[in-house]
Image 1 (cartoon, one colour):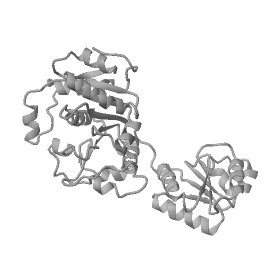
Image 2 (cartoon, rainbow, N blue to C red):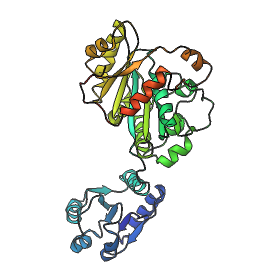
Image 3 (cartoon, rainbow, N blue to C red):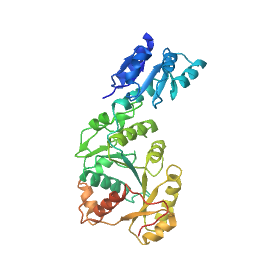
Image 4 (tube, helix red, strand yellow):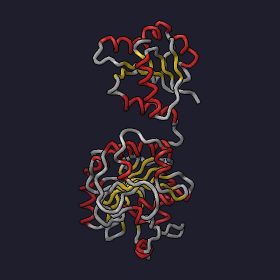
Length: 354
């Protein structure tokens, strides 16, 4: 695998870059002269040029490429931006302030994208609508289709999505183990840390006090999830916090579970107004009730993604600690299979399916 390329002959700067690369688990190719960088310039996943070598690299006239960064230990040096333009860099990073950015750049270079994860958020239009059950069911259904799936519990007051699946005692990391970390989490480290069941990994809360998730922690988890999983399903709280807003900004589709009664639709409309401040593709999953699904979707003005029927013995199974029954003969199982089948070809916004 091609390594990140460093072009510098400045001893202190090189020491800094080697230390930062070690923090990212990256091995570097180091060129102490501009001419030594030529064979690696186009192949390296990222190129970091020290300001001491910028003029020499510019004189070499290397071919244009992306992911070139100029690094300096000098702050507010007006000549840095001239050198940045001269070498075709995309930015100037001043150390030590930019160390976290460089760790992320090096880590991304050594852990290439293995998946193009689709992210789905699920949220209830009112309490008890069944959003957590739907989120867990979608994740389990996807994993049974051998899709590498990450199920994220983003509701600190939701009772625990791992408990809903009967896996609250499973060994592995919870949110409190991750929120103290700063910066990027690699997919490999995340997947190894979380409780996993076949193709499904679950990130939930510890029992007891559950603090809100920092937006930075959610961003890091979803960045890793979208790089290494086929599907990321996030169970959101109805009162959106910064972490939920971060998840919505990354979601390809958001499912709003609405009960088919007047108060359910009114409550769903309130939640929808908040969702639309952060994401675009919101679809309704209608929980069976006194109103027709078309009336519910027309009232909300969003597409219909399916019906969540009342399923006999579902509550009994969940209270036994069993996962939701998802056979192809169950209404919930058919809903999940149908939605997953159309997930990669989303409907145009504003269309309604019957």
